[in-house]
Length: 226
Image: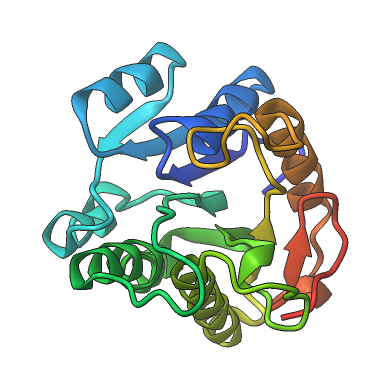
């Protein structure tokens, strides 16, 4: 991307919360934004921000498989994979089959289906950022709360690491922890406002260099243990 060019940003899972805030902030900064949502209400919110809105349900392989052709001909400078769900009990509480399937399909299978479709549309030196969670870190773990969610985020960290090998020299692929954010998922008791979290992450994304490829990074740029 030349300095005079308008960057193109892709946000996967942007109907609300962190994803929608990414769209708002990048549009406010003058970037061209392509964003996905799975329902009419989400698409309307994206269009209201003057983003190019694509209907994609990442939890549906049939729906997500169509993303590549919708992006055909694009050159994406920053791709942000934000979609995810949080559910399941604590360690020692076996998850119900349907809950396990929902969490693992959305948090692990979905990015495994979507991320490979982005490889051909990434501009040289692009940043591919997958929102993960510090809760997925094994090295930093101090309790077994929400063990299904933790397992899914540990798994998606593995997916990001593996993707980074194939993108070496072409793009920078990282997992990123947004902080504990006040959203529908994070709850009102969280300690970080969504506006601040996204502003932090935008700054960190802009500062990524080739040596960051395949790392796990906090919203403020601090490297995290896997």
